[in-house]
Image (tube, rainbow, N blue to C red; front, side, top):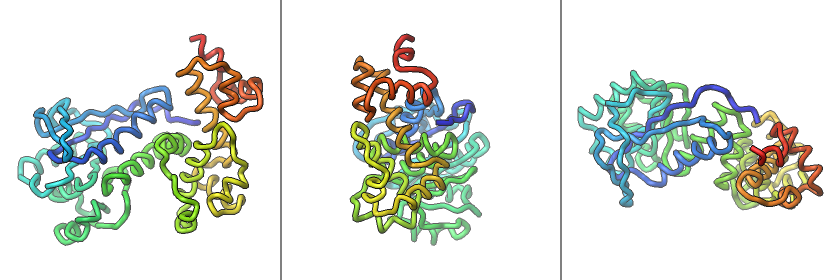
Length: 312
């Protein structure tokens, strides 16, 4: 798994009263998982408010901001996260704070209804943007200078947006793939069972190779101890093996077999680090016939053996 050696990406998460817990978790947890899988800090984030006063979500979860937006030095991305009652947050001081933040953050992202606030501040003029689909039509009417699109998410270098909920997870996975490669994004997605769907739903998604690859990775992740054959994976997804291989090559630059092996060895590493299971038991749980075969593959992939890893 090739991961960029760039410094950690600093992210600010600006919360407003009645923000969505669902959207927040789907934003932060993929970043936490990416750090965990990479064994180093790829992303750092801080919870922000317009002040340091406690912010309460739509379901009553209180979050105390680590600092006010105006005190934050800036970073790679500012995620703007109102949800319900977003139109009540368009007062001049809020919009002025967002405009000032643009000078400190490389990218501004509207999550759920966050694009409404960015557009009201004039920060989305000439940019493509999406928003929660419940207010998409009103958004397009209110801000004719914004290129409003009915996409699940948009991830640009200077602006990003999504409709909230599950689409926040999808946008974070796309960002992880852009920053650190498709393999890490697939591993993160598989941890959250992203891509799982009934076999009958695969034909509907066949025109979207990325979703097929995510679904295949989720299927692989669920079948670690007794790995499926690639023809079986392809058949389960309603594809030919040749098509499955073409999709993986296009989306990840690797074969399905290489991705499956990486997922199994990622699980082997997790068990090595987090349990006291014997190497033989780990090999069995990760679909290897014996400990020697798993150890050879483990060394090639991770640069060390399970026993050496436990010695530190």
